[in-house]
Image (cartoon, rainbow, N blue to C red; front, side):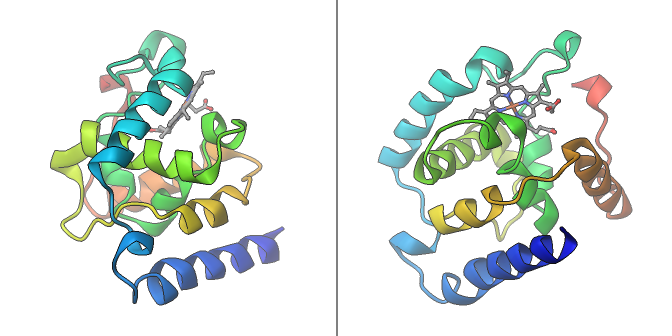
Length: 161
Ligand code: HEC
């Protein structure tokens, strides 16, 4: 399990930083207005039922907000992977290209002020690698990310969403 995870992680690292990082352009993490429009439509069709059309989720139903927190998560590699591994994505039949569009749209629309200066949109290849990993306990993964962010001085309180 751990070995499988490490292999995927290595592949993700190579894809994100090595091969694709060296190739700017359509394959290198750009995000066009057309992709944003597609991302919005896909979000409304596949995610808004739970996270609501404005992305604020429902604290009463334990559906997290998609504002600010994802923008903080992409500041650490494990957080960037996590966003493509949450159940709503892992269990959806959406193709990787559409998942990339949704994530990039969500980050741009709901998280712009929090994105790191060096943020690069998700590529389809990256989503494909991250998605192939299904953490057995996604909430434990989230706890580790929250601890990593806390160590960087970034505090996240879900009760205050
Ligand atoms: C059936 C309801 C449901 C749907 C549909 C759904 N989600 Fe979620 N989502 C949740 C819940 C509940 C959580 C909290 C984690 C958990 O309990 O599984 C969550 C967690 C998340 C998180 C992590 C947020 C955090 O701070 O931990 C992200 C990002 C996310 N969802 C994005 C999406 C996207 C994008 C879609 C559409 C492709 C989607 N979700 C579809 C219910 C849903």
